[in-house]
Length: 115
Length: 110
Image 1: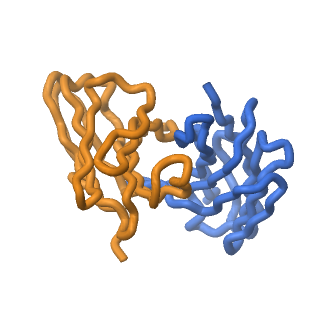
Image 2: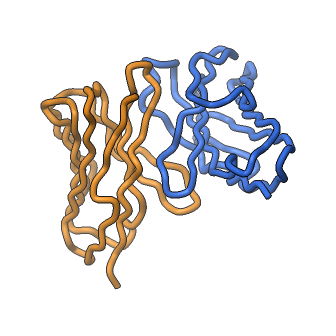
Image 3: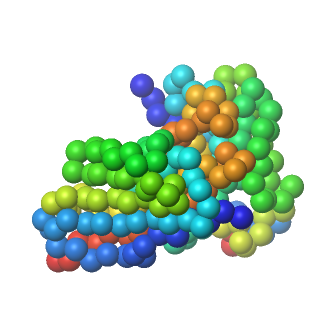
């Protein structure tokens, strides 16, 4: 039973570039949430996708966008990268959207470094 | 917005010691979750609590959902080296978005 898988594991970009991160949910899960975790902090909710639509969004600018495919996998896109976007990006999956989406299962994240 | 405050920020313990950490909020939560994160990995769910007063164990770990619904505690008995890591509490806010504490870092004294 495959857990949540994310790719790539590490990525280095420069300011102004665009990046796409990918996530495959745990088998049987249909909801994907994305989080940003800065060094030394807890994760911060970016947004959640269910039935190929963004259902909820945290306090992140429009530079952060996403997509969910019919097979439930998801992408996180970040445009016009800033130095402050350097972080670990975590994907979590669950069965059902909020408020039924606990507990969530996490992937190991993509470490994004902006130079 | 709602915030979760974890304490202590870090703990130095000797192998075999019991560990206690807690998580508090100024607002009510209906679910408390405890996760552990090892370096280079994502958080792993340890214990989920859904009812005020609930006491739940997972091996050497025990967590409690405070009766005020504004706090939760995690205890680890007889710590072992693999307990090292960062422990996070988390809970869904009024919009059902998961918010997190800043974590308690557990370090084993050499």
